[in-house]
Image 1: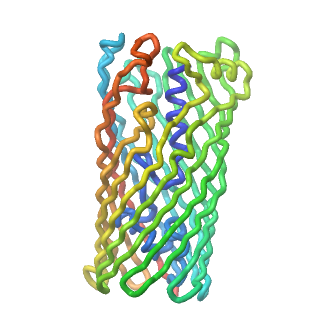
Image 2: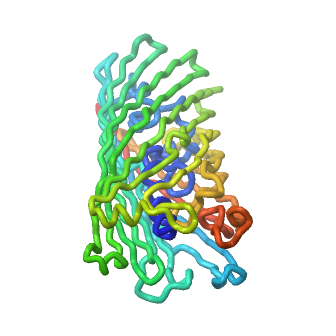
Length: 425
């Protein structure tokens, strides 16, 4: 069952991180076209409706508006490994070209010192699809994953003083996850959904016309993903499928930012955003069917089971820089950069959930026409090549590999976002 475990858990990890708005590889790191153009350095800025996500305190004092945008995400990954010395073949694979498009909508309304808002948005919506034949499987097998997460987030903000504001958003996450993968001569598939609740607390302080500081705390959210798994190998026992539950945790997110405005045209923003990946150390699937549960919890020849995986992740700090400049009365330009370190150790990296250290460049433009504004932005994640050693447990090939999937992993992602804002009078 070790092959099932490798894929099953690797894909489950996507669910575990999806609420952090695209952390490391399979998710966008920036919610909103404007924030995306500024490299996601938006905690100290937070002055459009997406403040509901970045820093709810930023809603206070804003002009009322309706904001809609869509984001298209295009992952491009490769995997290479020569297994000829280990009884296999030479693998040189790349993902199929896919577009993962997500719609989003935000609304905020200013009532003086109080402001309210509502966001219905997709903090994660992506997947990975490989040609199974590249991995030595015949035609007819599926090798893919799909993830979608919707957050319904009502928010409120209060302007305590002319300089200081606080805000709170409630997060209601609905996650959907599908996966299929060949295992030896059989096909394994699963589909699950889950519901979770959390909150985001934000603070914003405007020291003067030049300096504004922001801080955000997003709570850890525990969710039970429930669904159905299918495995052709168990058809022999008359139970080709079983319902299952898997507990996952969306990690705590802590962020701080500063926005510097040297003049009326220029804004420079710096953010530090910490994702507490270490909160997700183990994922366990519990199968309703007794035969499934017994088989998946049996220790295999490598000392592993099919229901449990230790992530061994580390907390990771993203560093972000964004610049916004008023090019003319109606046009604003943006550029950004952020550093996104890999949280996963070599032991847990696999092709369905790559984890790389990314250097990311971004840019965007806005054009305002009266009460309307159109914003476009793009980012390119340059994933560092990651070579996973093919070491054996205890130095003995019989014990299997130390790492989940040795070889050379690499992934880049291009994302484009287009948004429309209507300002209410």
